[in-house]
Length: 231
Image (cartoon, rainbow, N blue to C red):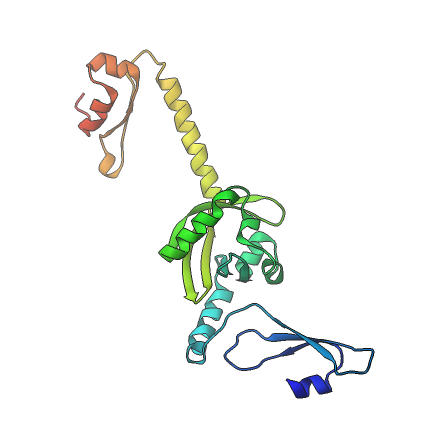
């Protein structure tokens, strides 16, 4: 490093101190007007610390990380993003370098006030999965199923996402239509049933209206517990 500083001119330089570091150290050399030695400012290029013994497995991980079709994100203990694969960059409209300037809460359209408790809980459990809403660079909100694993390397946490926005919208639409149907059916004066027609639900009462309760003398929950229609 000293020889590099002697020979280098002022500017931004990179130096790789050993093969144990996946990322390089950035060296910025600043000129001194009093002809004293150059002033060097070292900053770490945030990335993965990879022990020599695990370098091969890390190379395999990087290959999977870069080629995965689903978004994958790496964050540190503080919740700052360390890296993002190309699928994540495409999904959110951010470059990997832009991701490195973001915190997890920057993608949350809501729920920031409870994020710290959820993050602490995740680090303690080491794994988590579920569904969440995240915001892209344009401000659009997308629905993602996620799986997260803590400490794939000490202080490094991996999240894998799958965009299910269209599926979530379809499901919400079906639920809304079912609610509309039930609201209408509850006001029909004649007994009305919905029976299962496929698989294990064949003949099973899935829904009945108030008129059916009155006609057969059973409460709705009692008829549903019967399991199969005997009416």
